[in-house]
Amino acid sequence: MPAQFTDGDLRQMQALGLSEDAVKHQIENFRQGFPKIELLDAATVDNGGILRLDDDQIARYTEAYREASRGRKILKFVPASGAATRMFKDLYSFTATYFGIDYKIEKEHPSVKEFLQHIRTFAFFDDLAATMEKAHADFGDYMERGDFATVINFLLQDRYMGYGNLPKGLLKFHRYGHTQRTPLEEHIVEGAEYARMDNGEVHLHFTVSPEHRALFRRKVAEVKRFYENAFNVKLHISFSEQKHYTDIIAVDEQNNPVRDDEGRLVFRPGGHGALIENLNEQRADLIFIKNIDNVVPDWMKHTTIVYKKALAGLLLDMQGKIFKHLRQLDGGATPAQLNTIARFAEQQLHCELPADWAKRTPAQRADALHDLLHRPLRVCGMVKNQGEPGGGPFFVRDSHGIKSLQIVETAQINRNNPQQEAILAGATHFNPVDLVCAIKDYRGRYFDLRKYVDPATGFISKKSKGATILKSQELPGLWNGAMARWNTLFVEVPLATFNPVKTVNDLLRKEHLEG
Image 1 (spheres, one colour):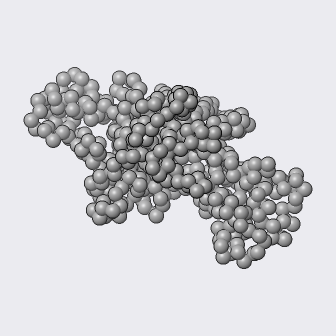
Image 2: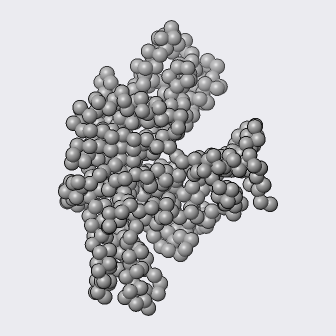
Image 3: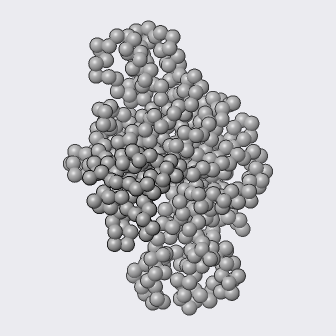
């Protein structure tokens, strides 16, 4: 039965920028589900789906980036929404159950034991000790008598340091002698190293949660002058939030809309795929995309910087070839040129020509090639599998029967199909979210990125709220379905470029400690 909405519901939707038809379509997606992705093969170095650059190519593409980026606007785009609560999941669990019996830490909370053993190592320790001192609580005394829960509460609770509800981007990750840096600052430093324009400007854009925007702005105001002087750059740092019109209604297990205690419909953010709207608003010739928590101290940055420049040089080199072919098509390509362009599309971009290609006239072939080439372009770094969760690179066939290279999440794959499971098992690389993008066409106009989304690639998951099971829906992921119809290249990048911080103890890995 179709959902029936009250006048109050309709006003609530209107305030979010959603139409009734859009919400009904969301509910229909819950009922029908999203089709699974059809994997054709894992993209690997051996089958050409992933490029492996040798030292000469890295040097050549790095130089290409230096030359071709002159006069272009470069932007670093960093998804940074959400609080760091999940980083401290184990610590929250511990404080809810710990009653001062030491053996339980070793047996039931080994990660908390590790945290406490190395607590002085964390970059935020000095702030923790100072916060406790201000409250007339001596850190050493509490540790000596085993009151570990209180120490952790000083770190997490809002009335003290509030780390549990702060955004990841504003936590102190790395120590440099007597100073510390947040991920926000590490991204500024990275930007100064590989996203610096020839006029000395560095543009960074962070997508943040509404409740955190003021905190980010305050931090930028605090550190901006220091990093401008340290790197002799002019920083331009901007922020945006997920659009409310990308929110998605929550439903119960029977796909009926869920309401809160006041009878209002419950809407949830549409996931990182909603950020295609934010990306679509950016104005730059070249955009680097990297997650907020994937940062390292300076002694580890060299490899990241080298490969970022090489990926950008490869993108600009490929973009130049694409633009040349598009102009040939505009000028009336000869049959020989059409054949050359077709081979380029197939071999360099892994595009699939129409099944009736041989029967088409030259004009029809030119139109098809123009459609294949005239798209946004991305180069994506891929890391060798190390058992990390997340999407990977595959050749797929979409719901329209078109073959292409895509980043596919495990949740999009039919794990009950032995053939699909075998392809998944054969994957050699995974997606570390390391992208360089070009969003302008050969005439200098910006693409409308919303036209290149595959809406059939969303996600549905279940979450518990008390005794109630809620179903939530996410839009096609930013680097999955939201970019499904972009032209794509995958490049192998070293594991040293991928050091995300998912739990607080990840900060104890050697990659995040002082060199």
